[in-house]
Image (cartoon, rainbow, N blue to C red):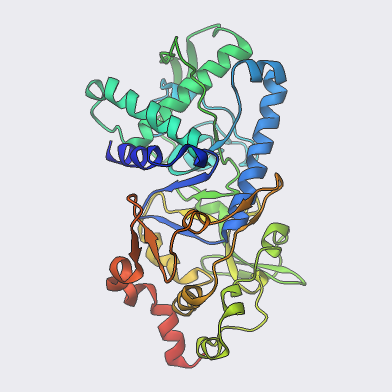
Length: 411
């Protein structure tokens, strides 16, 4: 409840003129960023446009407008419905993934092996959308928790409740597009373990209770192809650190380097400011001390890639074993340069992220609205600027290890 209430309190404190700002909500302990905000924002718009086109094909413009149906809030995708319960609407009512039907082989979506499921279930650790719509989701989720929490006290994390809200939306959409269910029973897979155990059996569906006097539409969609959010659980076989070059591409896997890969780096990444753009507007002495590679581009570094969808993702969510946070931290492209980059960004002039196809210019919130962002740090939910020293100083040895080791070696 604290997660939902805390975020909602912050969003309710924003003025109404900020309703169309984008807000990014992420788990605090297991998410890292790989690409710049301009790529993330651009892909958000591309994903929303594609998702709304699919709704148009399903409902038509009149029905969408009459029922207030559109997509605007993106959640991360999971390969498993959690908590596991095949009769839950959050499990059975989830739309199909946009990945090709048999993209994971003959076991695709049969349920026996989670790794062979296409991602189609909601993960609440990553959320991106307009302030007004995210606020509405938080309000509805908190209301549902207050109504039903004592009836379901076990294994009900925030993910459970967000997924329940999404299930109401999807069931309402099913009724609108297809009419009442012909049967409340389906043959569904009941998983026993992660090794293929379980069985398929007729299951009575749990039908969600829909609101009668207000909308059940929350404008939620998922990032099925990990264009923005890459969740890790059961995705390991489709994940690699890939090195892209002008002549060919190579895959830096757990233990091997392959010479060729069948796809190139996406154009939005190539058009993004260079990895070391922060050094373009600082003095020569700072650049010389940092000793960062000259003329580096995004092709110069191994980037985490979903090899199934061919997306180099802006954000990685370490769902599943948390040890990967430590194992993969040194693989991030900025690991050997992060301390020098942080110092450069502290002194460099802050700039806008970019302009999207609708003509809007995108800036960091505080910078756009008169906040003092000199130095490095972050704003609290009360609007107070917290310095790097107060937030992260105690952890510098771990964070900057690669940067400092590089300087010790003189490389």
